[in-house]
Image (cartoon, rainbow, N blue to C red; front, side, top):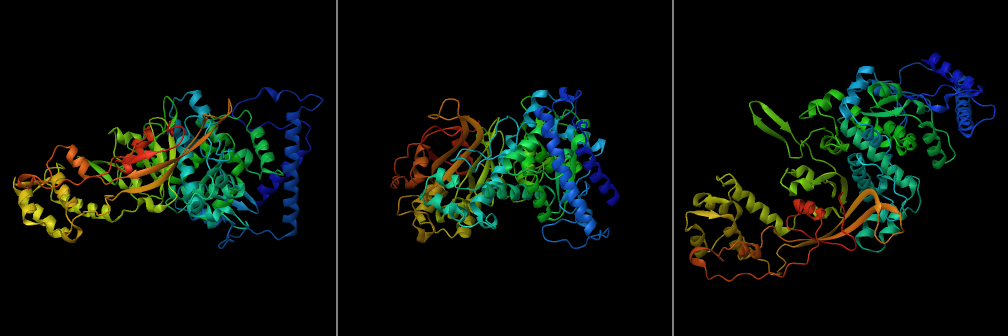
Length: 610
């Protein structure tokens, strides 16, 4: 291996002395591959300068190697941030091994069969050039706009599912784990970003605009690393790169690195598994620190036009191609859907939960005959809401609706955006909601009607015992007079019953009402109302959300039922305040799948989920 590495270094030195540029590694020929003119063109000069920089770095490593005793022994204990080859060899995932020497990560090629399987899994056997262009021209870049500088920008349709999932994890670190992003940074505003936004002590543009590039880059690296290890069952992460970037990217600043990467990608296209096999290199890490180091070195590559696609391929390889196929309900279909090239739900679920399942419900659904389909099997860090649930096309389970952190990827028919809160307590149930949940769960356990919302008298007595509700005799007689008890009537009685008897009567008149704020981010660059002509930027919208109880006396009366039912019809009806004026947009329908009957208000243009 050492001889092979030295041969490579010698080859780099020889390349730097050539007048004619070597044959570029790309999937198809370029027009400028003809004979080099006597006077160097700017492109040829740039390539020559890049080769000289690479050769100088190679010469420096050779000199360092000759001054130290080389070792070929297996490294069993590596420094904290330096991965060893034994880490990769111990991985249980059947993928490429990362070979790490000095400061260089040398990956391994995919076999032709693996490359063809990977390409077909993502794009299918027949894919349009338009879809390939969408996925080959989307980098992972932060917005240059001050107000949305914490957000990733989307310029091409299709990869939004990948960008939104990464964005959700980035927000998790920016808002709730600032201490992990400020290493070596003094007087950083990150420590108070969530609190300052909650207290409205500063404007959004000032707070998000004050985030340093270093802070955002660290959040991005940690987010990508967490997602890849999640896909690898927290055992390993596989990172896909391009062969032309096996060497460290030399450059004085990030802008120069971006320019070098962009020039290197000129003419490169991925149109088949053969192309993928020619240009792709992959490395597997079992140490999170080593994976983070590799991801950090690849930030200019992920910012390039191939960034989103490379990250998707990394996630699939981290999961394992065979495992991905076993996750899916229909593995014959491509993960990128035709005809518009959208990311499938399987891609989004893979990045959020680590499994490429097609469904958003909890657990598994038994279809009979030994057949079942998979949903979300484990709790998640960030969640998912979809407009399709409001249209009764699916039912999102509690795992995705109630993630650990108040951040959700929001799906519409054609786009993915992100919704988030600054306070984790927006998901906590207040006393009223907790009591309602307890009583409703006990009621439903006695419901033998298949969800019809009524139970027998014997079942009702059991509910009262389990929930410590002590009904007055006249209320009990009125509810049981028909031989069965309807939930809506029982709920009305509870709202009028004092807490001392186990009821939910609220002297404040707020009826368990909650008020909080959500923020919605749409990363696709669009023209913003009131901005300069031709200026496009992502959008960040603040929503005021007011959530009443799931059942109120007003709703009970709107249903046409009497105050107490039966002989108790003379009961006084509890008055409720007039409903707040609500603004409507499709996003509100998504919010209501998480907080039923939520009332949302915002300033300016309505938030867009398309």
